[in-house]
Image (tube, rainbow, N blue to C red):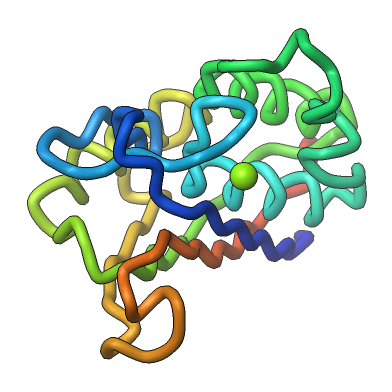
Length: 159
Ligand code: MG
């Protein structure tokens, strides 16, 4: 088994829609970024690439490449999962914590888990998503953006 850790942060951009874990979250400011700025998916991708020691999201999908401008992060996650499979691993489970003052994540947690499970082709029970605030501390606590931490376990195939 291999463990990996992923982290991502994006600042809010009121002009964009908010996508988290591949799910469109209504009535919330979006996030600034080269792709669709789905910070949750980006952290998941870094966790699974990290577990396989396959580099990071930036090395696979550089934000200097116009090809990834406005990219659907869901497709990047599918590609990352294919990469770890090609390296001989399957996704065991993923556990992510989303930190922001807004929006409230709880009403969206189940649809996000379902979507992430579908994108990674794993059971929903293997995907955990937790939301919390930063208790008004620092820039995240001031509501400037969203931070995500994620760990992932990969299982070597054939074992
Ligand atoms: Mg990102």
